[in-house]
Amino acid sequence: MHGVWLLRIIFNLHFVFAFSQAGFGPHPLPDLYEASITELQAGLARRDFTSFDLVQAYIARIDEVNQKGPSFRAVLEINRNALKDALVADAERLLGLSNGPLHGIPVLLKDNIATFASEGMNTTAGSFALEGSVPPRDATVTAKLRRAGAIILGKANLSEWAHFRGNLASGWSGRGGQCTSAFFPNADPSGSSSGSAVAASIGLAAVTLGSETDGSIISPSSKNNLVGIKPTVGLTSRAGGTSIIPISSNQDTVGPLVRSVADAAIVLSAIAGRDPRDAFTLAQPARVPDYTRALQQGALRGARIGVPRTSISGRVSAPIAAAFESALDTLRGLGAVIVDPADLPSAAEMRASGNESIVLDTDFKVEVAQYMAGLTRVPTGVRTLADLITFNSAHPDLELPPPFFNSQSTFIQAEATTGKTSPAYLAALAANHDLGRTRGIDAALQTFNLSALVLPSSAVRARVIVRPPDAFAFAVPLGFLPDDTPVSQANPTIASAPGLPFGLAFMGTAFSEFALIGLAFDFEQATHVRTQRRAFAAAVPKTQLADVIGNRPGKGLRAK
Ligand SMILES: *[C@@H]1O[C@H](CO)[C@@H](O)[C@H](O)[C@H]1NC(C)=O
Ligand SMILES: *[C@@H]1O[C@H](CO)[C@@H](O)[C@H](O)[C@H]1NC(C)=O
Ligand SMILES: *[C@@H]1O[C@H](CO)[C@@H](O)[C@H](O)[C@H]1NC(C)=O
Ligand SMILES: CC(=O)N[C@H]1CO[C@H](CO)[C@@H](O)[C@@H]1O
Image (cartoon, rainbow, N blue to C red):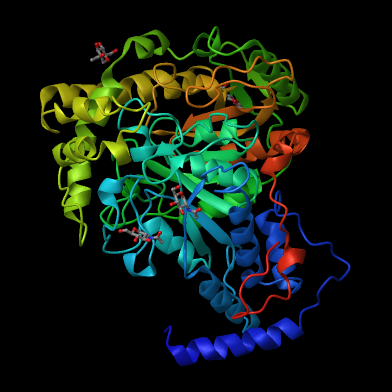
């Protein structure tokens, strides 16, 4: 379908299109730092700008800050087909073939989400061990985005191996280097979906996707002033090349990191759904709801929301605790019934439990080998977890640079596991479901008759709330560390500093996404925390649509 003749027709159509553009009519062009999918679609529909313009602008914005200036290292690779794909999307729109809210919208993918190799991008989880490896096809979520008309703009940096290698800094990968936050120079971007989060936070793409096994969407979205959805495991497919590069089929899930609840609902509607290649997805209801229909103000009125106090107390800093209490007042003001405390019966046992790491270690060893076995080609020859450990030891310059000499501890611990039939594994898996769901989240929801739990995002972490595969979590911006916050020592990034964002998390039972999107939307619309503070001045890219409109295909980029 991408024959040369077709491209020529598309180029010509684009040319006609360019001259029929309404240009700078009564509608101001959206600021790409903040632009929502809906605003971009409106501008595309009015022909104020094209998808080609959008891709040019985002590439120029990436160029300004990714390696130059603040050097965020948020983006690993740009899709060399993105401009061409944008031309196709523009032609389709002109021919009335636009198919929904993501049509022509540029999206960045975390580098553990597969894209078909002949397009030119790598899928490596940030590791040189997988450089040049060839996945047989797009991950299912990638294919779904393309079918919805989205443009795959590139791959985002991440904590290498989704932070499952050992003692590495969040946001560091061998291939991408150290990603840092846009809210304070050299600050920890959190992870492992670090590059996705930093890119979304300053508008290097309209939308980014990340993945979570234990905090990797909720934490970076919160710490980068974003909305993030960690879907119930099995709502979004992990299948692809053979899968997204896995940690654990029991806990991995793919979700959006975006600037608004509305954008999250649009993206989730496009990527959710059953997939015969991922058995976990068959547990979800047959029909994917249109999550945008949950975007109703008033959803909080009468909603019963619980506060798991013992999981929060003593675990968050004073400014976050204060912002959380005032968020509870906001929720009450919007008509919610706050049930406080609404503790998880298993809270103390969760804290003492080592079950999660048994499951993740065991799954990773088996599943990463399955992933590599499914690759069409692996130039480095790695096939097993043992090979990955050897590869890193043999290439310390690439994979073990200072200060990360001893940074394979999780790999080594996982290598010692004995497979998915071991009694210890089966017991740990059962314990996770029991602690996380049966005597955890679901017990609290049922006992107190709640639709959701609410807590500071920074309290949603291992051994506080076990990451239950059967639950779903949602982060929205809650506040920023105050200006008198002491700047912590960089090691290698700064953990705490003035202006660093933090978030509020809603948690619910399996597949309760629709209801919780409504609650989060109501809170967001009443507070608009995200727009209260911007990234530091040098972090904000200057290129806007106005700078690229008029650049035509073939003329090269004229970004400033
Ligand atoms: C992918 O990795 C290969 C090395 O195998 C490199 O030559 C290529 O430039 C990478 N692709 C992109 C788009 O960066
Ligand atoms: C797993 O959880 C159960 C239930 O709390 C507990 O009895 C057991 O000791 C835990 N196992 C490990 C390895 O922590
Ligand atoms: C549970 O809460 C709902 C409102 O969210 C209320 O309508 C219902 O009566 C409650 N059920 C019980 C058993 O209290
Ligand atoms: C798009 C982009 O800037 N990619 C860069 C990411 O970081 C690596 C390592 O520094 C560079 O080699 C890429 O060019």
